[in-house]
Image (cartoon, rainbow, N blue to C red; front, side, top):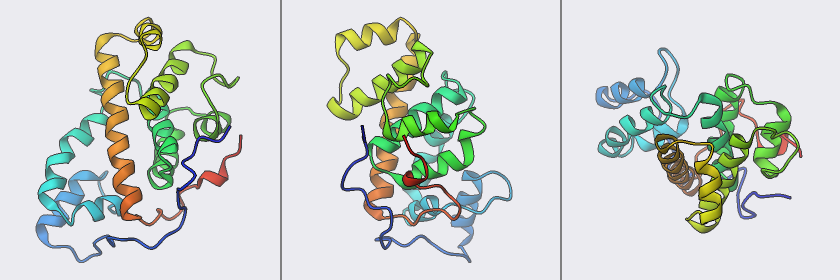
Amino acid sequence: MVLLNPNHRSVAMARLPALEPPFTTDVATRLAAMMPPGAPPIGLFRTFAKNLPMTAAMSPWGGYELSRQLSLTLREREIVILRTCARCGCEYEWGVHVMVFAGRAGLTRSEIASLTHGHADDSCWTAGRERALIQVADALHDASDISDELWDSARAVLDEPQLLDLLMLCGWYHAISFAARATRVDLEPGAPRFADVTP
């Protein structure tokens, strides 16, 4: 079962080419704050930096979503992000997260393939809590809502802060996916592609 958006494009010319160095001081400062020390800024951030007030406004929220303050674990967070980006057909952001975070999150190749092309009932998902994360991400993507039955099953394995973080994490990565896809951000060098993982 392939869940990728059939209209996704793996390769296309950027509609808003990312800023390239040398950067102005204010842009360089903002980009440095968004990346680990010494790491060059990724293309999405260099694209966002074309609207510096927007970039400054969104940075604290993006930082929260990737921080230890989030009530979901790193693994749970990445399950939600990879599923959401795959469902949105956003190869760019999916690839960044597979490249940077999947190993740290302990996600196996079969789990990444399932998040990209499969479903919550795949045999690699043995924990009910992880299946619930995928089911909620799918429901939000498909219906912008969660049925009472799914809400009750998710509520049985997630507390209130976790549910709220889950909902907002899905929404945030829909927004990121929309921006990355619509602007045709160039894929990051070395980042995997959807075709690199098979069901």
